[in-house]
Image (cartoon, rainbow, N blue to C red; front, side, top):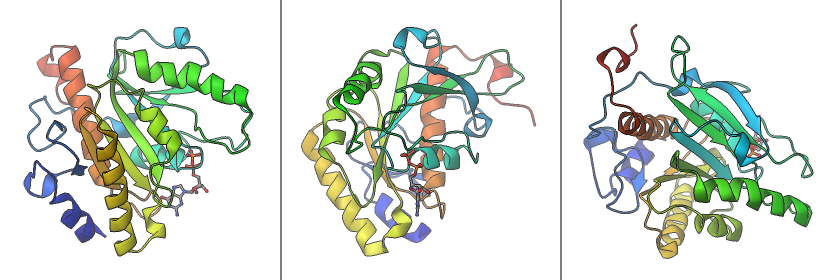
Length: 262
Ligand code: GDP
């Protein structure tokens, strides 16, 4: 599995030895852990803890901290991916009820000994329930759609795609809302369900679809399995790098904050 990922990533435009985190789809991808100039924070993903749930944008925390949003169709494997990336069992969990309240779940990242988190993960409601009433779709657009469009604190988006479905029309519609400067990592979840050749084919198909969408955003693409761990390290490296960059850009680092003590 690991060998497969390495082969795939070697096609990346910015090859950085073995540390290339994902298949990069354009030259604007700055998320390269090997060449990141940001001071390296201790990994923040394992520090993830629930912060708040909001049903209106006005209820979100003040825009002081970089935010990474997870978006995807319902059942794509978003909750499992968040849990696996943060090494938690039930940090994020999805209700399977299409009529559930549409809400953004925020998770704090950063050493708990500090008074404030350093960044947030924002888990958006899954979209695309076949039976969801129009009202649910409107609510999604109003909350998560607007969040993607206007949230200044947004520093990265993780687009969660079921490897067997690839990029659907709903995902394409969502891409149109992305601000052009925000880097995106597309993860093809449940890749353990496919053999290597099929995984590669799925990556090729999604890569072609994303190129066709002609997004100006820095884009990366990765096969992932929350079950077997495939791709988790690369996804973590991508996320830690993007968060480090954003934290460094937001606050001039003080020496004592740049690395957690052992
Ligand atoms: P969400 O609705 O996008 O949050 O999706 P979930 O994380 O709840 O996952 C939906 C279903 O897919 C659940 O039954 C998970 O156990 C399963 N699932 C999620 N990720 C994986 C994966 O990487 N591999 C496999 N085999 N199943 C997965």
